[in-house]
Image 1 (cartoon, one colour):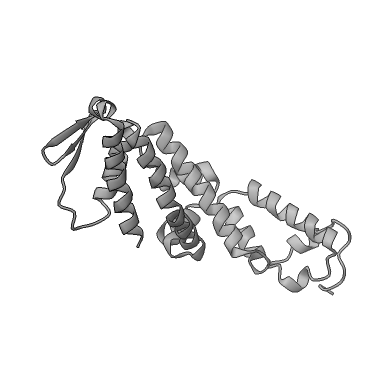
Image 2 (cartoon, rainbow, N blue to C red; image 1 turned 90 degrees about the vertical axis):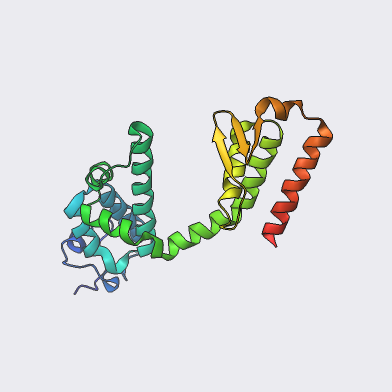
Length: 211
């Protein structure tokens, strides 16, 4: 009886089930599946806390766990970013829950295990792939006299290896490498060939790191 065709866009009896299994929606037409999925997404966006958790358990057999994880991850990271931007501090889990509508249980589980999720690991690999390109852009800005970019570049390079003996310090708009202080004014006064020498040194270093 549960496998009988569903009337167009009438899914009430499905949501009344304790758990919606794949065979419950097997007879849906493509149009009905699209309408059903849209309704599921609508409910996920509206439901909060335990009601949302209960609804997820109801539809667990028919949803894509990866898509659900990515949705939760985006909501949580967005809430954290906005809170830090507004208040300059890390939000409590209760605040993240209030902002996102996700339950405290979901927040705790996600924060404690997100690094083990394959979706997160794939994101990290993609970011790692882009890192050399971004670092190259930072280096080019530094060589044009951008002290913030220069400090960022040297800081990144100084933290990439535990055997680095060069001491790098940031002092306002200056960079101190061991006993040498480099200011933005000094960089701007360097001749083109001198800047080119610095660029060649950095490019050689980057090439060695990529081997």
